[in-house]
Image (cartoon, rainbow, N blue to C red):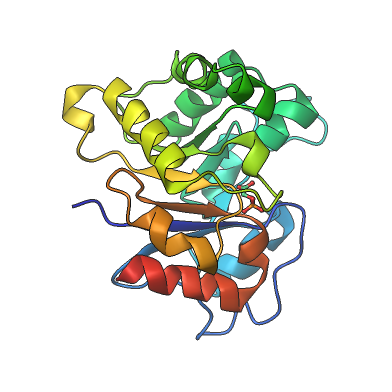
Length: 234
Ligand code: PGA
């Protein structure tokens, strides 16, 4: 049985009120793994509050003249355990290509950071029936034999209130699982992301190949996030 993982992606938002309280839902519990992706500026406060953290991005270079960037070793030294690689907003806003994202995953592993690789198609790509081709291309070059987590986040469902149906999500998750090397099929977690909220979490999280969620909007509301964590604990 894969333990569920519920991840909060705070994106470029401040920590929600009460996030650092001992009773906040952002703390890991025995039933569910919980990880928070705050801005770089909030990582220390999260860690001080005993919240398990990841960074939303890191550069593949080791050091040097890269204004505005941080590298994987700095992220690891800051106490992060996880790193998001290839979130669709990074791919779109910063031109991250499949090749660059694959290098990020490899570099993260070299620094003992656990990568959560984000994949997913746009609405046009789904309308054209190309969603599996797109995801296959995003997974090519990724060391799938390593310990990584994959997040299927259809771009059309992110921040839009439109969620993939449990059937659409499960179909893609099962497809992704079929691409994993045999000895990783049972253990690799595949999260769903895209407008997950308390109202739809139970149905999504009960699908056999959905092992958790990467939560954006609803992670900024501790009540909603807490409800999702509760649902995942069942
Ligand atoms: P959302 O974001 O839950 O607001 O759709 C998910 C994500 O971008 O990771």
